[in-house]
Length: 114
Length: 112
Image 1 (cartoon, rainbow over the protein chains, first blue to last red):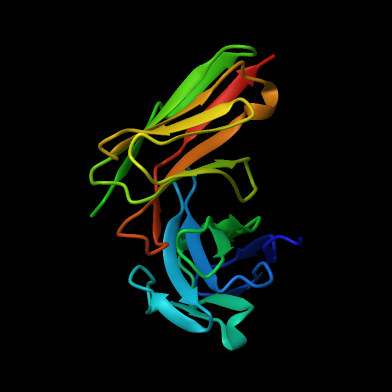
Image 2: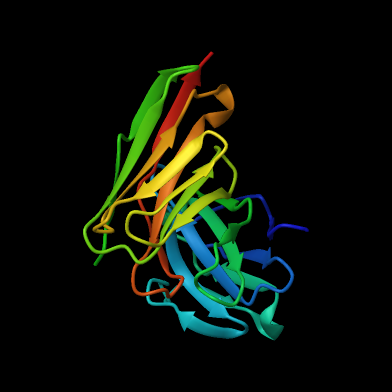
């Protein structure tokens, strides 16, 4: 069974530029999550999707971050414009329909904003 | 809001030694997850605990959730270099919503 796929793996941009990350969850997983992990900290949930609907985006900085999950499969996370403090690893995870099931994580995208 | 505190923050042990990592919550835990992360990689699921007093084992790793469901421990027996990495505990911040909050992680080094 293929795992959660993410691309790109690494991205370096200058502040005020835009960037987009892509995630393909495990086939059949209805729930998709985006996390931000700053160096030395645990992951922080940004947004949770159930199929193509948003369940929770309370910690997403909506003035600059946006995410979508069209057709309830792949998802993209965008930052526009980026700030220095956005430098982090962005992790995508997916799980089966029920929240009682464990979340499977992708390898992450390491973003450096200069 | 709920917070998870892990201790110790980092650990260096000699190969073959046992070790324990603790995860303490400020509120009742509805679901407690243990993950392992290698630098530059995603999180690998280890175990999930839900019931007070529950204990699960996989190979040389045992995780426990206390009766009051506010503390969990992860114990590694006879550590090996392959156990090295960052161990993270995560918890559902409400009743089974899937919205996980994580501790800050414990970095484990195992010296051959």
